[in-house]
Structure formats: structure tokens, C-alpha cells
Length: 110
Ligand SMILES: [Zn+2]
Image (cartoon, rainbow, N blue to C red; front, side, top):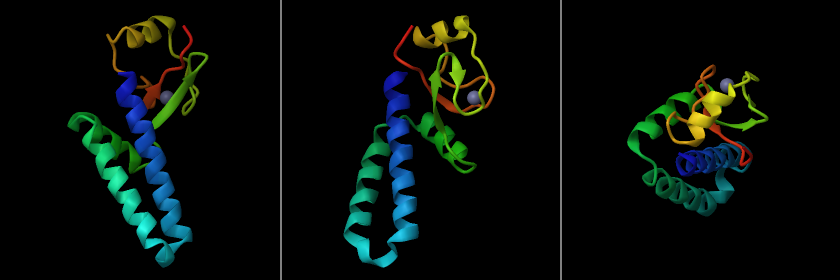
């Protein structure tokens, strides 16, 4: 699931850049905005529908993808059990924080 979550993280970054561009540059950056929209569209096409839906739902109330570090979700600060982390790494559980429901990008260690 690492690839999916990485794609979603990139998607989130692009969306944040786009929002910022919209706020600060407004009308003088039309070409760049169009390019960004294009990149966003291509990026979305690479993600399975079910994950996109969840991503979009989460993005309505903030960020959708967060990092796990030291067994702790960096969004809600809940510690995730080692057993759960292992299951996630083995692909037996979805990379989603059991507490806040955000997509979790697991750190490389462990
Ligand atoms: Zn969380």
C-alpha cells in the first residue's frame, strides 16, 4: 500500500500548492495553474477509485495523508501498536490510522 499512500501524499501536496497559488497569484499565473491542473488530473488517474473517494472526503476537513513516526500518528498523536504496524507493513491491514482515519505513510524503519 506504500505506493498508493505515496501517490496520495503527492496529490495532497499538489492540491496545497494549487490552493496557495489561487490565493496569492490569482490571475497572473494562468499557464502554471493549467499545468498544475493537468498534473493533478494525471496523478488522480493513477489512484484506485476507492482510495480517491476516501482521500477527497478527508480533504474536505483538512489533510488526508499523514506520516507515522516512532509508531505515532503525526496527526492525532495516537500510538499505534507494534502488532498493527506489522500487519500494515505486511499488507494485511490498510495504512489508515485506527484513531483519526487519515492515510498513514509508514516510516521506512522496522
Ligand atoms: Zn491518527
